[in-house]
Image (cartoon, rainbow, N blue to C red; front, side, top):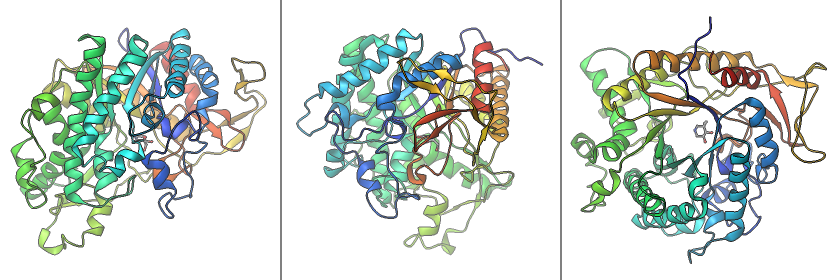
Amino acid sequence: MTIRFPEGFTWGTATASYQVEGAIHEDGRTPSIWDTFCAKPGTISDGSSGEFACDQYHRYRNDIALMKELGVGAYRLSVAWPRIIPNPDGEVNRKGVDYYLRLLDDLCDNGIKPVVTLYHWDLPQYLEDRGGWPARDTALRYADYAAVLARAFGDRVDTWTTLNEPWCTAYLGYCNGVHAPGVRDDAKSLAAVHHLNLAHGLGIQAVRAELGEKTRMSVTLNLQVTRAATNSPADLAARRRADLFANEVWLGPMLEGRYDPEILEASKHITDWSFIHDGDLEAIHQPLDVLGINYYSTTYVRHRDPAQTSVKSDKPIKHENAMPAQESVETLPPEGELTAMGWNQEPEGLRDILVELSRCYPSLPLMVTENGSAWDDEVAEDDTVTGIAGPEEGMIAVVPGRIVHDPKRVAYLNAHVNAVHDAIDQGANVNGYYAWSLLDNFEWAFGYSKRFGIVRVDYDTQERIWKDSALRFRDIARNNAI
Ligand code: IFM
């Protein structure tokens, strides 16, 4: 059976600067917090870093040829802040800007719309040295950076995305410390939440001040689909507590200009939220053209007696649930066949979050800005597999004769694309789906040990190798149907 998507639905692929670019020492880029973090022993499971990654900095034309073959209409990429403003003096680095201009121009020349995330976690180290996201000044510097990008890239960008997954920045970065900069401090993580929200609002204002009110603006949130283990009031309260800190801390300020008073109450033992200044909520609450949703899996929770867990030495809580104020929430182990990340597979979660968001915010279009799965892939020899020539003499966009058969990634893709269609059938206002990821890449604390790409990267040679999932995605994108 063929299921068609609405006319104009966008199929795209997504990546992020630190995960794919490499070239960390080139053309004036200075260190980001991830360079510093990776250099600390024990932070990255395979001891690697984004130093070389997929070398997209040099191979972007090759990867654009690959996307053209896939038939995608958009590429979601992010800009590395330390390439653009490498030093605290705020001076713009022409060479950094030029790299992205070349990339954006080549995308546009190939009919692929650039969807540009301003911040996907590579904060300049000099800003972390001045306090990072727990410091208000970082949000102000972000607004300056946003204005620079708007001036430099202008109408080459189809859609601007202020932040990718601020949940990860605030909680993995400053609460349980498994991401850069590796801080474990509940109060700082909540200050980071607010300053990320503020950066979002100031960033939108800055871009629109340069490019006009009609500029398409978005943010990408990894809203958590949390299910209660039972319908008991205690388990439902645990679910509510998780939801407040996972989702409401972003949706409330960004879409309604308010923090739910329950959030402030539930965290008053951690912070008094005095970092919220007069006028901040108005600044954060800016009109959005589209909301990006990243979705991978669901989480099941139940009530736990806070008295039985020491809040002071809360290491075990932090490891199962990165957020603060979760003393009464127990996260249950995931069930069913888990992906290589140890995440469950529940496509209905994607359907449910899309339907629920459209019910709450009917006039706000949604796009699935990330969805995908990691598996332990193996390369097979196959003479029938055809390669693709790259755009320059001697370049090979995808090598012939080799392929990864990845039935589990294909099944995950099919199931989740179907779930998006189900959501649309149930009234969700969804206008795009971006596969995470175009390429295998640097998976943060897991280094290169987890492969999310629909195209394999041989990290020794930087060759790109087809996976069955890429060919499946090509069918979906080209036909706008599954
Ligand atoms: O690789 C990440 C990406 O950077 C942000 N969203 C989740 C992906 C998979 O973990």
